[in-house]
Length: 232
Image (cartoon, rainbow, N blue to C red):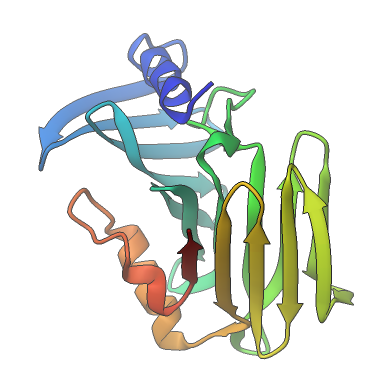
């Protein structure tokens, strides 16, 4: 199934109220915006899905975990499916995440509570507060969530300065030093350049943009923090 088919199915189920959902639709700035809220008494989920010409452009999510933390992220569906988000609660931001994968890596959520899940990612990177700074805590490349395969570059007790890994027809070469660099070749060629530590101003910029993301928000704001370079 394509990302569009997966999201269409999710929206139709929300409109049919097969779950405890509230649904609103509006047309704005050339987009169709689907707004879906759900409270299953365990967590509160709010989604905004922007569609233009039947193509999914981005999906915004706010997920409220009891008792204190929230996850807010936006998945931007360009050539790639790229997600940027923050974990926050009260006056603190405790985490930042960045993921990127192919559009065809989107899958159906078996619990039917998310518009889609990631079955395959080129990279997932998670930052957490450590010694008062937002540092890279975990990074994996070529992650197949269905087969549970993937290569860990950084974890709590693991740090690989250089690694090569093949999965799903892609060759990944990653190096971890002053920055995390990943080169992907195969069906497409992509270069990724990520910091190993985010400054306070970068964290605030990510939080501000993700929290207020809307149809007219620029999709290239991330380029001075998380660089994605596509090669022909």
